[in-house]
Length: 236
Image: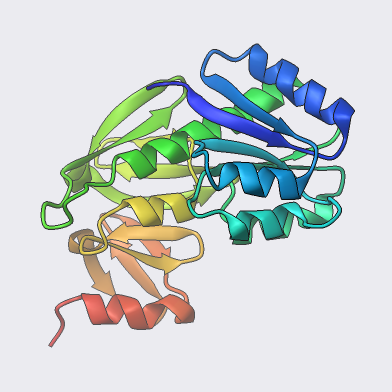
């Protein structure tokens, strides 16, 4: 996997230097720009396509969240802020991770980068020709990229900052979000049944009012997702 082309946007010069120094330590990142102004960044990024953006939230003229909406493409985003209250917004924008200032831990920084790389890989693995559904997907497990046959995946489960992917023989902890998995998995084969679960449709053994069974596992069905599930199964 080639290094991710990235940029940093922050109106704090010290934070720009800190993030730039962390990027310089990381072989998988290629720094293309440092921007002290969200307006300057918006103009530059409209002409320059990036893989990853380290983005401050609170900035004059335009917030980081507003900047995301101006971009003509969708890079991976790692939000950086000194306030925890923006973490909820981070989920709504499906960002790769959320770092709290001061970003002093290289290990935590690297964890955020690994999550961005995993999400980027999911995007790249989508087939260009939707008439040819994918037969496998590559997911990051520990430090390895593992190939998963889509036929072997039974369900995917939210697991804190990660997801767990259940196959016939094992439960794998994967660097990804449930939303990014939902977007990467073929919609004709997989369906979201709950805020915490995605299942492979042809692995469902039975369904009752609020649960379903896959192998020996009982999984919950939320009311908000039940209608879509029922529309996708072939029921008399």
